[in-house]
Length: 501
Image (cartoon, rainbow, N blue to C red; front, top):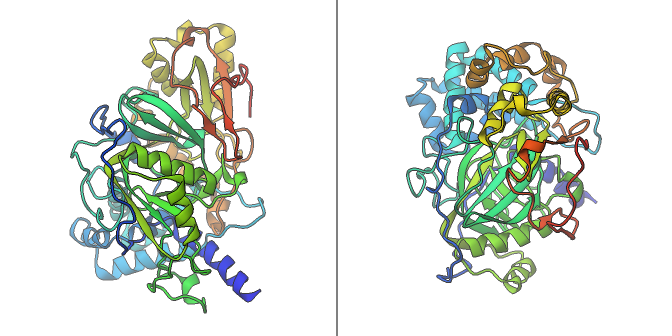
């Protein structure tokens, strides 16, 4: 019983520490194959990360804590921000304390928001290093988080740590580019608000997955990453966190072997750049909601299927028999190296034209994306003006924008999304609405800040059928793996117009 309790506490602690990839010191468990499928091409559809997109990336204390796992980050705090050792140590200690407070429970009675977590971080950092340095620190974290400085665009593995992207021109889909862009190359596309991950090969959507995403307190980032390694039976190095210090079973910095009962990691993980992973181990109930700390969460069945598909896409051999063997020998860590890294594009799009219908998703990370300004941009990408909508269509869409502007707790943002002379500037700058919310919204949850928000309260999506969009848009899910063991075929009828779920 004591051992089971210890393992349970370690699992919770790992979640609190974030999905940070730990180096693996084992030889490759697979010989790469040259029998490749379509070659991944990160340069086929590059676009820049805009200032608005970077500004909207929420910097919370758990996110900041995860970046301290990279030694180069602390060095940059000295060289770029001119922080003293005392300031750095205090920032790190505060971030660690906030991360240690995060815990998962089986109750859904805690409701927090990204805005509240961001506001709390701003307040704490300002008290340590001042408001100006706090802004500079947030900008540095966003730069590294998006991969625009070449430090996190890789897979985050030991061999890739701190290295730039393979092409030097890999960039991320972001606001300012074509909305809902359909890749013309081979890549993985993740859209957090839709809880969806797609696999494209040569511009064709071949597989879709229903996923879990990062909690509001530790959101899934945006930007272009890459996957180059699949790690089976990973070892685990406990972080230097308070919850580890109080454990009698493990010690910070001491490796816990693969297959150990004290190792909370699952069968496999796929690093996609600090502090994020694609990994299994999630319960079916965690798909389609918050499930991790800055990661893409899958069930074990989904993770194994995805790993096999990723290996094929990246030019490596990985058979069902090999996966079964790795699962059988849990004490042996194996790496499957891809001969061609596969781009992983992390998006945040709450207004999506899909297969002729307008899908409006909840703004779960409080990024003020469900606005008329953004709606116009999306429609115009498909040659449709908002003025072309019928009175009934427009009424449904505007109501959907309002309802889907609710935060994760179900609270409705005010004022109602609408166009104004300053709407475009506000959207580009990403400052006005967010600043007000940081000061006024959900301060009670920010003050508590001792749990993670486990679920989204209320409906998550509204679908509106628009006549002018018929035959247009991002493709519908292909062979959707919902985690239940059954695959949803493309022939499954789409939800009716204005159906809410």
